[in-house]
Image 1 (tube, rainbow, N blue to C red):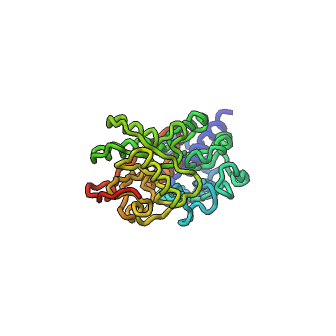
Image 2 (image 1 turned 90 degrees about the horizontal axis):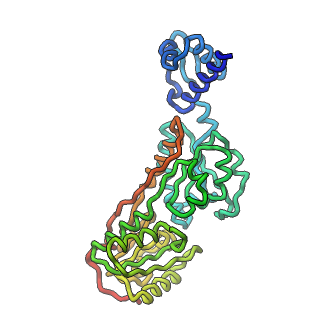
Image 3 (image 1 turned 60 degrees about the horizontal axis):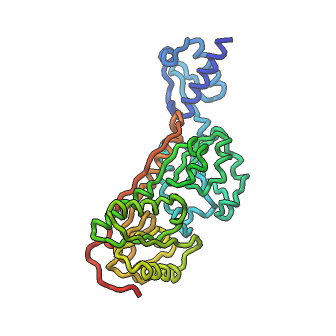
Length: 370
Protein backbone atom coordinates (compact mmCIF):
# COMPACT_ATOMS: atom_id res chain seq x y z
CA UNK A 1 0.00 0.00 0.00
CA UNK A 2 2.97 2.36 0.40
CA UNK A 3 3.56 3.20 -3.29
CA UNK A 4 -0.01 4.48 -3.94
CA UNK A 5 0.19 6.69 -0.86
CA UNK A 6 3.55 8.04 -2.03
CA UNK A 7 2.22 8.61 -5.50
CA UNK A 8 -0.80 10.54 -4.16
CA UNK A 9 1.43 12.75 -2.03
CA UNK A 10 3.62 13.55 -5.02
CA UNK A 11 0.57 14.17 -7.21
CA UNK A 12 -0.94 16.62 -4.71
CA UNK A 13 2.36 18.43 -4.21
CA UNK A 14 3.10 18.82 -7.93
CA UNK A 15 -0.47 19.81 -8.80
CA UNK A 16 -0.47 22.42 -6.04
CA UNK A 17 2.80 23.85 -7.35
CA UNK A 18 1.19 24.17 -10.78
CA UNK A 19 -2.04 25.63 -9.41
CA UNK A 20 -0.13 28.17 -7.32
CA UNK A 21 1.85 29.36 -10.33
CA UNK A 22 5.25 28.02 -9.31
CA UNK A 23 5.16 26.30 -12.71
CA UNK A 24 3.12 28.79 -14.82
CA UNK A 25 1.07 27.87 -17.87
CA UNK A 26 3.20 27.54 -21.00
CA UNK A 27 6.39 26.73 -19.09
CA UNK A 28 8.18 23.36 -19.08
CA UNK A 29 8.75 21.27 -16.00
CA UNK A 30 12.33 20.21 -15.24
CA UNK A 31 13.32 16.99 -17.03
CA UNK A 32 12.23 13.76 -15.36
CA UNK A 33 15.61 12.98 -13.83
CA UNK A 34 15.98 16.43 -12.30
CA UNK A 35 12.35 16.61 -11.14
CA UNK A 36 12.53 13.15 -9.54
CA UNK A 37 15.65 14.22 -7.65
CA UNK A 38 14.03 17.50 -6.53
CA UNK A 39 10.98 15.65 -5.20
CA UNK A 40 12.97 12.78 -3.72
CA UNK A 41 11.16 10.02 -5.61
CA UNK A 42 11.88 7.42 -8.23
CA UNK A 43 11.39 8.15 -11.93
CA UNK A 44 8.74 5.41 -12.12
CA UNK A 45 6.64 7.13 -9.44
CA UNK A 46 7.10 10.49 -11.14
CA UNK A 47 6.07 9.07 -14.53
CA UNK A 48 2.90 7.67 -12.99
CA UNK A 49 2.07 11.10 -11.53
CA UNK A 50 2.82 12.86 -14.82
CA UNK A 51 0.57 10.41 -16.66
CA UNK A 52 -2.31 11.21 -14.31
CA UNK A 53 -1.78 14.97 -14.69
CA UNK A 54 -1.64 14.59 -18.47
CA UNK A 55 -4.94 12.67 -18.44
CA UNK A 56 -6.45 15.58 -16.49
CA UNK A 57 -5.02 17.98 -19.09
CA UNK A 58 -3.03 19.84 -16.47
CA UNK A 59 0.19 19.10 -18.39
CA UNK A 60 1.07 17.95 -21.89
CA UNK A 61 3.85 15.42 -22.61
CA UNK A 62 5.65 16.82 -25.67
CA UNK A 63 8.35 14.37 -26.74
CA UNK A 64 11.19 15.15 -27.21
CA UNK A 65 10.75 18.72 -25.86
CA UNK A 66 9.60 17.70 -22.40
CA UNK A 67 6.52 18.29 -20.23
CA UNK A 68 4.63 21.58 -20.59
CA UNK A 69 2.12 23.06 -18.15
CA UNK A 70 -0.93 23.68 -20.31
CA UNK A 71 -3.52 25.21 -17.98
CA UNK A 72 -3.77 26.54 -14.44
CA UNK A 73 -7.16 25.13 -13.61
CA UNK A 74 -7.57 26.39 -10.09
CA UNK A 75 -7.08 29.96 -11.24
CA UNK A 76 -9.96 29.65 -13.65
CA UNK A 77 -12.21 28.03 -11.08
CA UNK A 78 -11.16 30.03 -8.02
CA UNK A 79 -10.68 33.76 -8.61
CA UNK A 80 -9.51 36.19 -5.97
CA UNK A 81 -12.63 37.55 -4.30
CA UNK A 82 -13.13 41.01 -2.82
CA UNK A 83 -16.28 41.33 -0.71
CA UNK A 84 -18.32 44.55 -0.93
CA UNK A 85 -21.16 45.82 1.27
CA UNK A 86 -23.50 46.50 -1.66
CA UNK A 87 -23.63 46.54 -5.46
CA UNK A 88 -23.07 50.28 -5.97
CA UNK A 89 -20.30 50.60 -3.38
CA UNK A 90 -17.60 51.23 -6.00
CA UNK A 91 -19.56 53.96 -7.73
CA UNK A 92 -17.89 57.38 -7.83
CA UNK A 93 -21.14 58.82 -6.48
CA UNK A 94 -21.23 56.56 -3.41
CA UNK A 95 -20.80 59.03 -0.52
CA UNK A 96 -19.09 56.90 2.13
CA UNK A 97 -15.38 57.58 2.50
CA UNK A 98 -14.64 53.84 2.82
CA UNK A 99 -15.67 53.45 -0.83
CA UNK A 100 -12.75 55.62 -1.96
CA UNK A 101 -10.26 53.59 0.07
CA UNK A 102 -11.75 50.37 -1.32
CA UNK A 103 -11.37 51.58 -4.90
CA UNK A 104 -7.69 52.29 -4.28
CA UNK A 105 -7.20 48.91 -2.60
CA UNK A 106 -8.83 47.16 -5.53
CA UNK A 107 -6.45 48.89 -7.93
CA UNK A 108 -3.39 47.44 -6.19
CA UNK A 109 -5.16 44.11 -5.66
CA UNK A 110 -6.01 43.80 -9.35
CA UNK A 111 -2.46 44.66 -10.41
CA UNK A 112 -1.02 41.65 -8.56
CA UNK A 113 -3.83 39.38 -9.73
CA UNK A 114 -3.20 40.43 -13.35
CA UNK A 115 0.54 39.82 -13.04
CA UNK A 116 -0.19 36.29 -11.81
CA UNK A 117 -2.95 35.49 -14.33
CA UNK A 118 -5.71 35.39 -11.73
CA UNK A 119 -9.21 36.72 -12.17
CA UNK A 120 -10.68 39.16 -9.63
CA UNK A 121 -14.34 39.13 -8.67
CA UNK A 122 -16.20 41.55 -6.44
CA UNK A 123 -19.13 40.10 -4.51
CA UNK A 124 -21.70 42.44 -2.89
CA UNK A 125 -23.24 40.77 0.16
CA UNK A 126 -26.13 43.11 1.00
CA UNK A 127 -28.76 44.81 -1.15
CA UNK A 128 -28.87 47.86 1.12
CA UNK A 129 -25.40 48.41 2.61
CA UNK A 130 -26.84 47.10 5.85
CA UNK A 131 -24.68 44.66 7.81
CA UNK A 132 -27.85 43.10 9.27
CA UNK A 133 -29.37 42.41 5.84
CA UNK A 134 -26.89 39.93 4.38
CA UNK A 135 -27.99 37.96 1.30
CA UNK A 136 -26.47 34.65 2.35
CA UNK A 137 -27.04 33.11 -1.08
CA UNK A 138 -24.27 35.34 -2.41
CA UNK A 139 -21.84 33.40 -0.23
CA UNK A 140 -22.82 29.90 -1.38
CA UNK A 141 -19.67 29.77 -3.52
CA UNK A 142 -17.33 30.01 -0.52
CA UNK A 143 -15.37 26.82 0.16
CA UNK A 144 -11.95 25.74 1.41
CA UNK A 145 -10.34 26.79 -1.89
CA UNK A 146 -11.76 30.33 -1.83
CA UNK A 147 -9.44 33.32 -1.40
CA UNK A 148 -11.14 36.43 -0.05
CA UNK A 149 -10.46 39.96 1.11
CA UNK A 150 -12.69 41.27 3.90
CA UNK A 151 -12.43 44.91 4.95
CA UNK A 152 -13.48 46.18 8.39
CA UNK A 153 -15.75 44.76 11.07
CA UNK A 154 -18.81 45.74 9.04
CA UNK A 155 -18.72 42.10 7.85
CA UNK A 156 -18.63 40.61 11.35
CA UNK A 157 -21.85 38.61 10.86
CA UNK A 158 -20.02 36.71 8.09
CA UNK A 159 -17.09 35.68 10.29
CA UNK A 160 -18.55 32.39 11.61
CA UNK A 161 -19.41 31.20 8.10
CA UNK A 162 -15.98 32.08 6.68
CA UNK A 163 -14.29 30.36 9.61
CA UNK A 164 -16.43 27.26 9.14
CA UNK A 165 -15.68 27.07 5.41
CA UNK A 166 -11.93 27.20 6.08
CA UNK A 167 -11.11 29.57 3.22
CA UNK A 168 -8.11 31.87 2.92
CA UNK A 169 -9.01 35.34 4.21
CA UNK A 170 -7.02 38.55 4.28
CA UNK A 171 -8.73 40.85 6.76
CA UNK A 172 -8.11 44.60 6.52
CA UNK A 173 -8.98 45.91 9.97
CA UNK A 174 -8.52 48.51 12.67
CA UNK A 175 -7.28 48.05 16.22
CA UNK A 176 -10.57 48.01 18.14
CA UNK A 177 -12.28 46.03 20.89
CA UNK A 178 -13.91 43.87 18.20
CA UNK A 179 -10.69 41.90 17.82
CA UNK A 180 -11.33 40.27 21.21
CA UNK A 181 -14.94 39.46 20.39
CA UNK A 182 -14.01 37.63 17.17
CA UNK A 183 -10.60 36.28 18.09
CA UNK A 184 -11.18 32.81 16.57
CA UNK A 185 -11.85 34.30 13.14
CA UNK A 186 -9.21 37.04 13.46
CA UNK A 187 -6.50 34.55 14.36
CA UNK A 188 -7.31 32.41 11.31
CA UNK A 189 -6.72 35.34 8.91
CA UNK A 190 -3.78 37.26 7.65
CA UNK A 191 -4.49 40.69 9.10
CA UNK A 192 -3.56 44.01 7.54
CA UNK A 193 -4.07 46.45 10.40
CA UNK A 194 -4.59 50.12 9.57
CA UNK A 195 -2.88 52.10 12.31
CA UNK A 196 -5.48 54.87 12.76
CA UNK A 197 -4.38 55.31 16.36
CA UNK A 198 -0.80 56.01 15.35
CA UNK A 199 -1.99 58.40 12.62
CA UNK A 200 -4.05 60.45 15.08
CA UNK A 201 -1.20 60.56 17.58
CA UNK A 202 1.21 61.74 14.87
CA UNK A 203 -1.30 64.40 13.76
CA UNK A 204 -1.56 65.80 17.30
CA UNK A 205 2.23 65.85 17.62
CA UNK A 206 2.52 67.72 14.33
CA UNK A 207 0.01 70.34 15.44
CA UNK A 208 1.87 70.69 18.74
CA UNK A 209 5.14 71.34 16.89
CA UNK A 210 3.26 73.99 14.90
CA UNK A 211 2.52 75.82 18.16
CA UNK A 212 -1.04 74.54 18.71
CA UNK A 213 -2.09 74.01 22.32
CA UNK A 214 -5.88 73.65 22.05
CA UNK A 215 -6.43 70.71 19.70
CA UNK A 216 -9.99 69.43 19.13
CA UNK A 217 -11.36 66.25 17.52
CA UNK A 218 -14.43 66.19 15.24
CA UNK A 219 -15.28 62.75 13.80
CA UNK A 220 -17.64 59.75 13.66
CA UNK A 221 -17.65 56.70 15.94
CA UNK A 222 -15.22 58.15 18.50
CA UNK A 223 -17.40 57.08 21.47
CA UNK A 224 -16.95 53.37 20.63
CA UNK A 225 -14.73 51.46 23.10
CA UNK A 226 -11.05 51.66 22.15
CA UNK A 227 -11.89 53.64 19.00
CA UNK A 228 -8.46 54.03 17.31
CA UNK A 229 -8.62 57.73 16.38
CA UNK A 230 -9.85 58.72 19.83
CA UNK A 231 -7.16 56.59 21.49
CA UNK A 232 -4.49 58.16 19.29
CA UNK A 233 -5.83 61.67 19.91
CA UNK A 234 -5.69 61.24 23.69
CA UNK A 235 -2.28 59.55 23.51
CA UNK A 236 -0.94 62.45 21.46
CA UNK A 237 -2.23 65.01 23.96
CA UNK A 238 -0.61 63.11 26.84
CA UNK A 239 2.66 62.81 24.95
CA UNK A 240 2.72 66.55 24.33
CA UNK A 241 1.74 67.35 27.93
CA UNK A 242 -1.50 69.07 26.92
CA UNK A 243 -4.44 69.29 29.33
CA UNK A 244 -7.00 70.72 26.88
CA UNK A 245 -9.39 68.17 25.34
CA UNK A 246 -12.45 68.80 23.20
CA UNK A 247 -14.29 66.45 20.89
CA UNK A 248 -17.61 65.93 19.19
CA UNK A 249 -18.95 62.75 17.57
CA UNK A 250 -20.64 63.24 14.20
CA UNK A 251 -23.84 61.26 13.52
CA UNK A 252 -23.68 58.12 11.40
CA UNK A 253 -26.50 59.21 9.08
CA UNK A 254 -25.69 61.21 5.93
CA UNK A 255 -24.18 64.56 6.83
CA UNK A 256 -25.86 67.88 6.11
CA UNK A 257 -23.73 71.00 5.77
CA UNK A 258 -25.81 73.21 8.06
CA UNK A 259 -25.98 70.51 10.73
CA UNK A 260 -22.21 70.00 10.66
CA UNK A 261 -21.66 73.77 10.77
CA UNK A 262 -23.88 74.11 13.86
CA UNK A 263 -22.20 71.20 15.62
CA UNK A 264 -18.76 72.64 14.92
CA UNK A 265 -19.82 76.05 16.21
CA UNK A 266 -21.24 74.41 19.34
CA UNK A 267 -17.97 72.52 19.94
CA UNK A 268 -16.02 75.76 19.53
CA UNK A 269 -18.19 77.69 21.98
CA UNK A 270 -18.47 74.96 24.63
CA UNK A 271 -14.73 74.29 24.59
CA UNK A 272 -13.85 77.95 24.94
CA UNK A 273 -12.28 77.92 21.49
CA UNK A 274 -9.59 75.78 19.84
CA UNK A 275 -6.62 76.65 17.66
CA UNK A 276 -6.52 73.42 15.66
CA UNK A 277 -8.79 70.58 14.62
CA UNK A 278 -8.41 66.90 13.74
CA UNK A 279 -11.38 65.98 11.54
CA UNK A 280 -12.67 62.76 10.02
CA UNK A 281 -12.50 62.27 6.24
CA UNK A 282 -16.28 61.96 6.00
CA UNK A 283 -16.64 65.76 6.17
CA UNK A 284 -14.63 66.40 3.02
CA UNK A 285 -15.88 63.25 1.24
CA UNK A 286 -19.61 63.36 1.96
CA UNK A 287 -20.21 67.11 1.96
CA UNK A 288 -17.98 67.69 -1.10
CA UNK A 289 -17.11 71.17 0.12
CA UNK A 290 -14.95 73.35 -2.06
CA UNK A 291 -14.05 75.67 0.82
CA UNK A 292 -14.19 73.90 4.17
CA UNK A 293 -13.45 77.05 6.14
CA UNK A 294 -16.03 79.25 4.45
CA UNK A 295 -18.76 76.59 4.24
CA UNK A 296 -18.48 75.60 7.92
CA UNK A 297 -17.70 79.05 9.33
CA UNK A 298 -14.25 77.93 10.44
CA UNK A 299 -11.61 80.62 10.98
CA UNK A 300 -8.69 80.24 8.58
CA UNK A 301 -6.23 80.75 11.45
CA UNK A 302 -7.32 77.34 12.82
CA UNK A 303 -5.05 74.56 11.60
CA UNK A 304 -6.83 71.46 10.26
CA UNK A 305 -5.62 67.89 9.69
CA UNK A 306 -7.79 65.15 8.19
CA UNK A 307 -7.30 61.84 10.05
CA UNK A 308 -7.46 59.80 6.81
CA UNK A 309 -6.50 61.50 3.54
CA UNK A 310 -9.11 59.57 1.53
CA UNK A 311 -10.84 62.55 -0.08
CA UNK A 312 -9.69 65.10 -2.63
CA UNK A 313 -8.30 67.27 0.14
CA UNK A 314 -5.74 68.93 -2.12
CA UNK A 315 -8.54 70.56 -4.14
CA UNK A 316 -10.26 72.30 -1.25
CA UNK A 317 -9.67 75.91 -0.22
CA UNK A 318 -7.51 75.89 1.78
CA UNK A 319 -5.99 72.53 0.73
CA UNK A 320 -6.21 70.22 3.77
CA UNK A 321 -3.28 68.48 5.41
CA UNK A 322 -4.03 64.76 5.80
CA UNK A 323 -2.73 61.49 7.20
CA UNK A 324 -2.35 59.28 4.09
CA UNK A 325 -2.50 55.49 4.16
CA UNK A 326 -1.06 53.55 1.17
CA UNK A 327 -4.34 51.91 0.13
CA UNK A 328 -3.02 50.61 -3.21
CA UNK A 329 -0.13 48.92 -1.42
CA UNK A 330 -2.61 47.39 1.05
CA UNK A 331 -4.36 45.81 -1.95
CA UNK A 332 -1.06 44.48 -3.31
CA UNK A 333 -0.12 43.02 0.08
CA UNK A 334 -3.53 41.30 0.32
CA UNK A 335 -3.21 39.72 -3.13
CA UNK A 336 0.34 38.50 -2.52
CA UNK A 337 -0.68 36.74 0.68
CA UNK A 338 -3.69 35.09 -0.94
CA UNK A 339 -1.43 33.83 -3.75
CA UNK A 340 1.39 32.58 -1.53
CA UNK A 341 2.07 28.82 -1.86
CA UNK A 342 1.52 28.41 1.88
CA UNK A 343 -1.05 30.68 3.50
CA UNK A 344 -0.17 31.52 7.09
CA UNK A 345 -2.09 33.70 9.56
CA UNK A 346 -0.20 36.76 10.72
CA UNK A 347 -0.33 40.53 10.83
CA UNK A 348 1.17 43.54 9.07
CA UNK A 349 0.74 47.03 10.50
CA UNK A 350 0.14 49.83 7.99
CA UNK A 351 1.20 53.31 9.09
CA UNK A 352 0.19 56.65 7.63
CA UNK A 353 2.42 59.48 6.47
CA UNK A 354 1.54 63.12 6.87
CA UNK A 355 0.96 65.09 3.67
CA UNK A 356 1.21 68.74 4.62
CA UNK A 357 -0.87 71.30 2.78
CA UNK A 358 -1.93 74.88 3.43
CA UNK A 359 -4.42 74.09 6.22
CA UNK A 360 -1.53 73.72 8.69
CA UNK A 361 0.69 76.45 7.28
CA UNK A 362 1.89 79.28 9.49
CA UNK A 363 0.15 82.03 7.51
CA UNK A 364 -3.44 82.12 8.70
CA UNK A 365 -5.80 85.08 8.74
CA UNK A 366 -7.20 86.10 12.12
CA UNK A 367 -10.93 85.49 11.67
CA UNK A 368 -13.68 84.70 14.18
CA UNK A 369 -16.17 81.85 14.09
CA UNK A 370 -19.60 83.11 13.03
